[in-house]
Picture 1: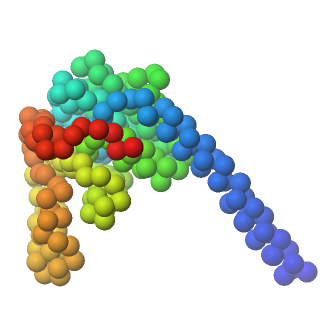
Picture 2 (picture 1 turned 90 degrees about the vertical axis):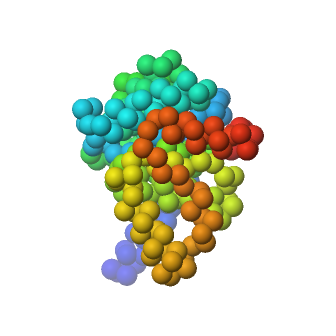
Picture 3 (picture 1 turned 60 degrees about the horizontal axis):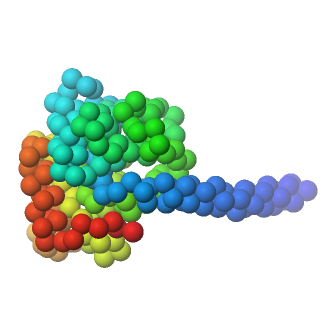
Length: 229
């Protein structure tokens, strides 16, 4: 009897998983339909915990303004911290300000600088990540935590394996990212040969908003600016 009950519960779980496909599909469809209209944008990533008085918050805001002035819109994860700074800079500069929000048990809430028609909500991290990659012409990666690292390394992996077209990946803050890049070079590349030297060309390390724009401009002088979709 117990065995039969356990078996029934397992079937119910499998059935619920099957129906979840429709929720996942709806998030993809909504994301594709709305984001296909936003025009060329650059995504800004970073910690949700960075306060407005922090130098990286202010730098992210200035970077977003410069990005808009260079003719792009800005996409963020829609929450507080660096995400808010990115949307704020884009908003103050009169540019496109997109927020891809995710429901989390802490930290995440919509910031007030997202365009009202460009705020999207996601339940699934993997759907949201597809939207970042599919509709961004570049990644600007500010200091952050696990989520920021996740976005960074997924983008590098997809470009490295030619699953998506190349776009610039810009790390901002040598004091934050320098140690990681040293480890990548000495441990991944030199000591273990786990990556190719040319893979390092995918990443640029900078410190200022002007350098961010220089990297974007240099990249799109060599490659046509066109959506990744």
